[in-house]
Amino acid sequence: MLFVLSPAKALDYDTPVPTDLPHTLPVFGPRAAELVGVLREKSPEQVAGLMRLSDALAGLNVARYAAWRPRHTARNARQAVLAFDGDVYGGLQARTLKPAQLQWLQQHLCILSGLYGVLRPLDRMQPYRLEMGTALKTAGGANLYQFWGPRIADYLNQRLAQQRAPVLINLASQEYFKSVDRKVLKGRVIDCVFEDYKGGYKVISFFAKRARGLMMRWAALHQAGTPARLQGFDLDGYAFAPAASAPDRLVFRRKTSGAVA
Image (cartoon, rainbow, N blue to C red; front, side):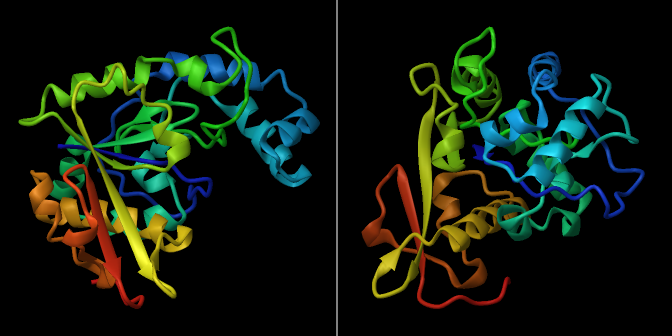
């Protein structure tokens, strides 16, 4: 199986990273450089309007684009799974995983990215902000979905061909999974849905984001190799809900929030 996750807006480039941690380089580095070239032409005011950012955040990201370099080193970049912060990555807690578990993630997880297209967990990534839904005009089209076109699905197909079964587990948001051209993708797609009880079971965004990271953590800890194995997910009080599920839609529910197991 292959999993896909969304990235995060929040980044952590302050917490030290082990110096002996392996790294890889982004697959679509030249395409990322092309996007940075377009972004460098934008003023802080234009970036603020394009991404709906405050003046301070717009200025920060203009500085990031100016500092971005095609060469990703230990000085200007860090492994993506350790650079992303926020709800999803708070659930994943990659810093607490053992080297073998991080290597399992490297083989089974793809992080979708507006700037990089796809990142493997150990790919070095420089600080940036560019959400997939951004209407950034490039030579490739009016937005990032057109810019990336079928490339992301083509890459996922290459990765799926290396798996024992071509199954893609979707843990990404709708905004990011739209970047995967389903007409091109060659594999079964299974969505994971996380619901909490609040006058009835429903998806609550904050909890669902964290649960996606928890699911990815659970899969790495147990090296889950089949969709059926994922039904055993039980972190933070969630449990598989067979009556609410379907073959390509696995629903997990919890009555009350709990502590991470």
